[in-house]
Image (cartoon, rainbow, N blue to C red):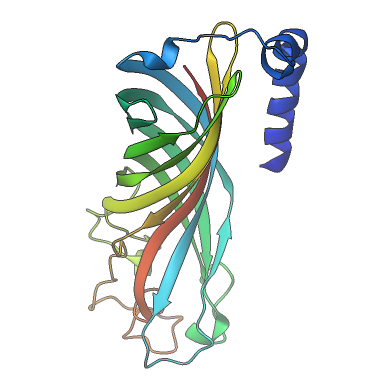
Length: 252
């Protein structure tokens, strides 16, 4: 992820080097798009990267060596932005988007008998999210062509790959989570005003509120488990909640 971000910013810097220096960082910069953010409502779009994780809580009456390893990867984001000005330094933002991510859950060996392979102990969770955040943007005073800001709010997420309606479970290698989750979000960013558009990179943390795990069926059989009548994948887990970091590059 870091390499992709560096390359993106490097290319952006090269393309606009001369104009950027004259209009943004010089002692007396030319003020670009001076009245743009004075509009009551304006729109944009974003592209970005994400890193999704799970926060896993376990049942208190179980041993401490039960942690499930979450192997993360970098996903991508794309979406739209609607910004409603409430007053000079506060705006309300709606940023619906499509987010793709994948995670591997690797279960510890002591959940299974000696015949279990790494394949038995691993569940891949592919997620395609429709993300609907409603955020409040707190703007600082504009300095030349730069304006930092803070973001915070709530969101709802629909997981199109949740398997929530599947009657099969982990005994058939189907890992199930709930389709809808709720989150709260916090982050920061900077508006850079160029001659023709606003470029706005931001970083945001997303924290799930509700447990999204669907437990395995009580009637299922798990032949590789120590207890074949109990699911090694869900029976020890109190809750699973989403958490993620978003890096978005927004254009207005």
